[in-house]
Length: 287
Image (cartoon, rainbow, N blue to C red; front, side, top):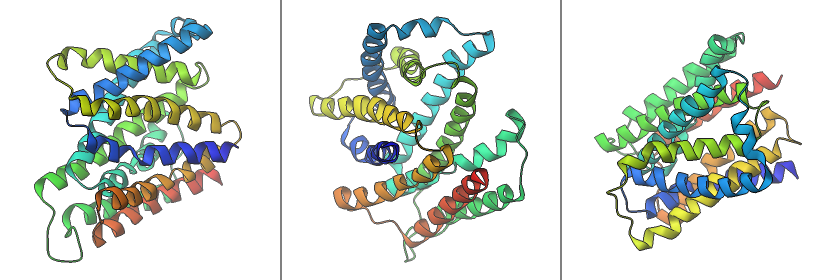
């Protein structure tokens, strides 16, 4: 059952780019409204179950800083950069460049978690760097057409979102044993919405965008994270991480079906190198 829950969550996340393309509002609004919708729904739920008390039980000031400031800031940066990537380059490029996250985790873990480095880490970094270089500087297809400046910015934003996501992972390792998952997700979403509220007051939302924002808030920001977290009860962490590689595959297929986006040859090769580097990291961690 755990494998089904995790794969379902990943397939839901792989449709993220399709819905983002349907919402015709500025990026700040695109980040704010799903976070606000999910935050309100989660607040109602955790208030009714009594889990709201956990928020007030941080054991140290460092936990409070992580929970209320650093994780929401990194979440906002990750979401904004990831959505920027979706709107400036192909969905495949956005998702594949985002999957540099395991490499950033491997680089930072020895510093922040005192985990020893391994030669596999440096091989993975070399492969992922080569993959990003192919995506950024080689032609976008098998022909001689080069990437536009906007597409290149989208790929860079995708890689930067991977760095922000890696920071979130490292901080969650500190808090995961102290708080329920739904409490952490609620704080992430609600604090992002509070931070962005002053900047979105003048953003109007077309009526045709409302259903897509609601889906982003409920399906991608509540249901998928909860399914993913629930799956960890019966699936090992390294197995769940490897299953995560269904996301770029699913995203590429959905983009082809719904948006007729066909990744270029060098983008596919570069993306494959990034996925391979991430797999090497996860494989070593699982041994």
